[in-house]
Image (cartoon, rainbow, N blue to C red; front, side, top):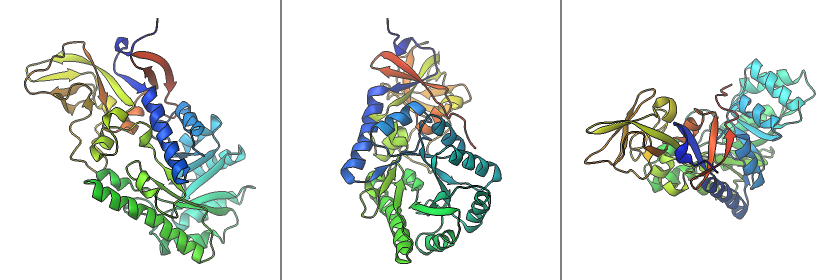
Amino acid sequence: MEQEWKELDTPTLLLEKEILMGNIRKMGEFARMKNVSLRPHIKTHKSVEIARLQMEHGAIGITTAKVQEAEVMAASGIKDILVAYPVSSPAKIERIIALLNQGVDLKVTVDNLDQVKILQKALEQTNHTLEVWIKVNSGLNRCGVEPGEGALELARAIILLSRLRIGGIFTHAGHSYGANGQEELERIALAEANAVVKSAEACENAGIPIVVRSVGSTPTYRLSGLVDGITEVRPGNAVFFDSIQVGLGVADRSECALTVLASVVGVYKDRMVLDTGSKTLCLDKGAHGLDSVKGYGYVVDHPELTIERLSEEHGVAVFEGSCKLRLNDKVRIIPNHACTVANMFDEYVVVDGDCVVDKWKVDARGMRK
């Protein structure tokens, strides 16, 4: 007899397979219809199984945040990988070279002259030429050269180096997570795409070809991916969606594939306690703030509950009036930020309706290097 998810101990990370597959297909369909490549960011799920499904449904390769994530994915047979994070430390460069030795088609982020000089020097001791992508700043003000002349200046330096070649220009509009409405989201998406196109055109006008022009960010990719000159999109969170995406109006709760199964461990006059604290749900309401996100996750089928505060092992949910939940009852919680919550678990319990159908490892869990 198949096990039902309601019988599982808690807290447990549940993954609705049908919703997951729907989200994966939609990303692939967008890429095909708009004639852009799809390179999803796997930092959301950190799962070999899910990455393979994305490759089967239209992805040409993957994006990782860290070299360790790239190592895990390469070991599984995925070879076309962008490390979307500037790499300059000798320890990481040694591991980059090891991946090249294994035949991985690796692309590494660059955004400053000192960094490219360090990469060049290290690669001179090898037979490899490393493909690098220039990251430009499109408004997040994190990493990245300034668009246009900033990108061109770095590109001119790179083409003089024997062990580096420019493969693309890309950006990440992470500030879209703080967008206040559709109009602002559209403005951010347009600026994201324009930062890449402007930079690529500046390079090509100077005789430096730019093959890939890539944008990311789940809230914006369906907008920025429409701009002429963009050739690739890199959504990450869109594989699961979460309460932040719902708050932004990017997704409906019915599209949220990931939930945390929790138990009621205490019922009191005006509150109840769940066995899901900050070590499960994370203290996350979005990196850039979002007024529409209430509490620390949405309790499915119980809109009267607001998870008001978390300690390490306790989630305190308040309610007005009455709530019919009792001790040991179970609820599912849509997390605010699926990426951070997935990183707290060793495995996904894959469900289809009420039944548990599989378990998938969070293979790159906790890999921060």
